[in-house]
Length: 422
Image 1 (cartoon, one colour):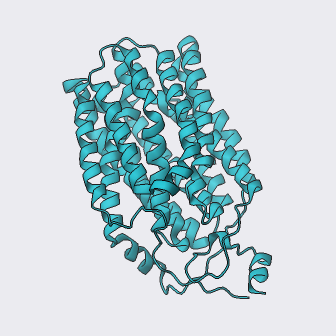
Image 2 (spheres, one colour; image 1 turned 135 degrees about the horizontal axis):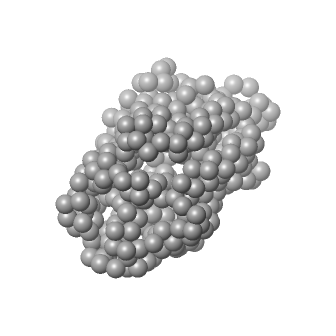
Image 3 (cartoon, helix red, strand yellow; image 1 turned 30 degrees about the horizontal axis):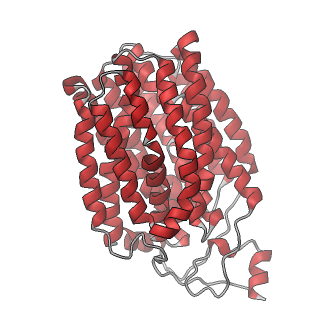
């Protein structure tokens, strides 16, 4: 039978669009999802022990806020180009494992070099190269997860929560370790964790099953996606949101240290926020099915608005704990709902590229953040966070212009007729 033939050749229905498909989607393979969970854990463990402290390290070696802001914007600028490129490579050639291994190995080598210099110019060059290889890892991991989940995109949060667990382990422990032994240890720590990540990548399939569609040209389909009203307003909204979120990622730790906080306190605040994420990530699938992605996105925006208000009036670094409490319904709902939203409006053939474009919006927000908020922090201190709270209001307004059916339970994708041989 057609269904059995597809299974024998690896064309599982969990990646074939449900449109005109008479067979129900197969359940995701739990064995493959174990590898995905391990990769999320290790990747965000590396992030928690490195990027969370990198800007504090730059501050310690004498870079100004403006220079830190420029460095935080250069990486995202490169990612605007590299994330869609890597996503396209994954889709076009239907490859998985080789891209993961190549990107991770290159990132490890470049990070080692980054730890050997304190010159701003050299740091900038290495930041550009590192961003080209490491930033697309989230694109590849998210798109691979969505392919494995198939129609059960609502379960994304239950995979992603393992990233939060990894982040907790390193952001908390590294803070006290770095206080005792020095900030330069962020580099060997990152290399060790990403080395483990590289080994786990060998558990991924070499290739992803191809979806054969009636679309004549891949690029035509992508332009069809980009011309969608929902995609345009969603992307614009996410850019403003990303600027506001990046202000926390890049400068909250720096601001806490300037207020007299220790690296250990910064790590504890980050770990608390990640710990609170986990139950919200787990419950996210039920809430998305019940209320829809658009509603849950707006709840996430509201959580970030409250966080930024707290940081804007913070005069004692320990006040940051109050902001972290909102992380459950800010970051968790925003992340799970935005990924589900992208998946809903994207045909199966273009998942990797669409996730690349989505992550490019984050990168664009990070780039603007670096240019804007580095100068704002020097000029108005904590008032920088209040400015970013205003940007979240703009983001919410833009999201409200998406169509009435977008992000609602049962909303469909762009229609794409699959051709199944066999």
